[in-house]
Image (cartoon, rainbow, N blue to C red; front, side, top):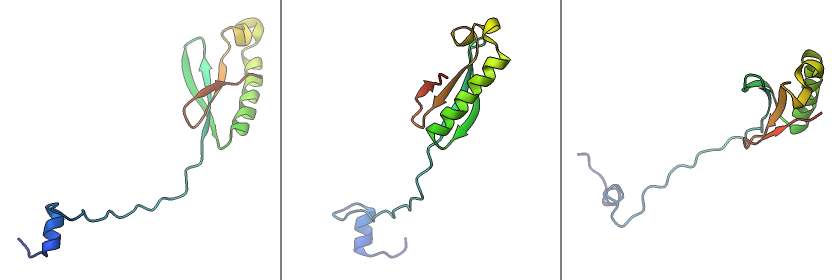
Length: 103
């Protein structure tokens, strides 16, 4: 065993001296929040990703636009609209909570 000072031996054996201080990790910039725009297929009960945004306002605007697209591709007369089997649009906040987008 290599030579060590008594203080080093005490630290390693935790006798009377505190352990060596841990080096602090440098934190980078906080990650930007991501708001996910999700679609929900009511017919097959499946979620599908649409896009990701840095702000809730941008996600909401894209969600409203998606609802307008759904009104054309899945007309209310065939699907029953948002009360029927037409796909729905949600925003997932960074904390994981989901909120439905209503035009």
